[in-house]
Image 1 (spheres, rainbow over the protein chains, first blue to last red):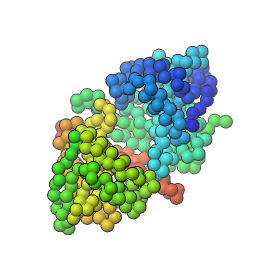
Image 2: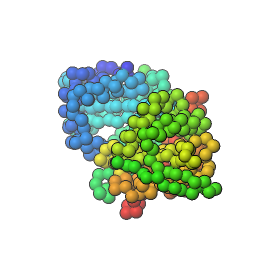
Image 3: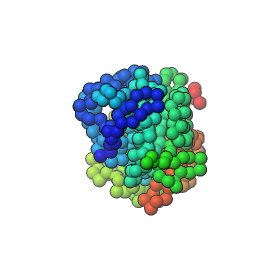
Image 4: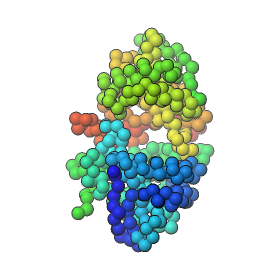
Amino acid sequence: MSIIGPSTVATKRGGPIVLRAPEERDVPEWIAYQLAILQSDPHKVREVTEFDADPGAQWTRLREHIDDPGCLMIVASPADDPRRIIGDLSFRNGKYSRMAHQGHFGIAVAADHRGTGVGGAMIEAMLDWGAAHPVIEKIALGVWATNTGAIRMYQRHGFVEEGRKWKFFRTGPGQHVDDVQMAIWVKPGLAPAGFNTHIRRA
Amino acid sequence: MAILEPQAVKARGGIDVIVRSAAPGDAVEMLAVRRNVAMTSEEVLTQADELPTDPAEQRGFIEKAANADGDLLLIALVGGRIVGTLGIKSGGRRRSSHTAELGISIADGWRGKGVGSALLGAAMAWASAHKKIEKVCLSVFPTNGPGLALYRKFGFVEEGRRPRHGRHDDGRYVDLILMARWVKGDTA
């Protein structure tokens, strides 16, 4: 079981939020949240028409993710509206032994809560979880090169660029956006020169 | 349907290689080659105990690649025996379906003999002619000198280096080099 919380945390520019694992009763709200994200956020590889809105299929996916010891799934809710989902973070480690010490994550925040610190709170929770995890040493992400606000936020949390998959996203004929790959270490003594290590909060 | 009909290639040193799409009947021998590669090379992601044990699973991969328009699963044969494999998998979303990820395995005893070139030549010709694929990507450990040389020969360039992204079971770390090549002339 890779879940955290529920834990209530303060956000920088918004109210307190609860970070927790999704539950089966969240599925209708989860689907509405996902559809709203895919409609409002241009920096997603998946288009809204590519989302499977079947509740059973979504719960199966969430369940598999929650049950995998190398994966982490966080949803964020306002402390005063605990069934509403305003953000999510999904981390998955490598499937094979040679890649199991590292993993990638993806994150989204509801349009009316962007810029309030929900994303940062989820990232810190994931980094703390990674630091305490028996296997995870390195956490990586991919971000659209045009999403400069997100890149700055990842840099503030210690992530450093390790590659740039040029023209990885295609937004139209002859139109592409690079995929910036960033990483951070969560165990001491392993980060190569130029990279950072997350120190777990007490 | 992505199926490549058999092509005869004269490899380095005059070896006659046949390159073609894998068929369901190749599953058992392909699995044996994958096991051979896993046991004789540290340069692949999967180790022997992580491979499918049931040939039906390998047959599933073969059928899936044959039925997917953007996927390709090739085998190289010498004297009727499989000596190498190549897989290409296209991105699963509309916004990533112009990219394809490529991987190659060459059986022990057949490395450095031009089998990889024969496979990659056929695959790159297929990708260049494909209506959607614009970019072919791959990842390779820096310890894989022959692999790096082969990819550079076919025009792949480095676009990232993930430090300590691989970890051998004895604790040795290895970087992962990201390489790519644009296969369409219009937008290099």
